[in-house]
Image 1 (cartoon, rainbow, N blue to C red):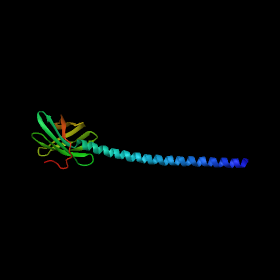
Image 2: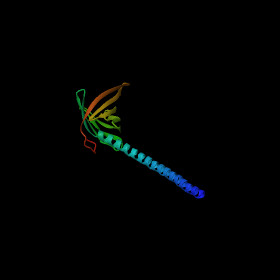
Image 3: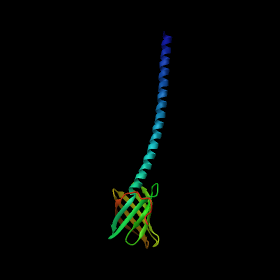
Image 4: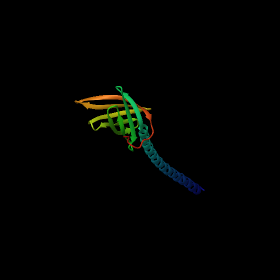
Length: 160
């Protein structure tokens, strides 16, 4: 009787130990899978965030600086890059830069006159608050321009 009790106790204990080992293995594998899913979801959301940030910038903007009308047309260059044109009453600039979330960093270049502005900006709603900076005689000059989005349709080709 005592022998059969020990044998039964041994079977129950063995079952519990193997159940615990199996449970921990399943938990470990499950956590690995969840961790992998977490990484995949994180990567997907990161890429989606970049694409949405970029798409938010695409469109046509208008603003005024010192009484001069300014228009800006931005298009996607793929990834986090955008490009386009900016025009005032006198000149037309080629704009290019990088987008991260609602921030833009790039430049506006008027090649025929050799004018290059560094361009930074933040898109808040439909308002693109930009700062155009240039250097003249060793001094940096910054111009703040608020541009209002008037058209958000995706444009595939550079305007003329």
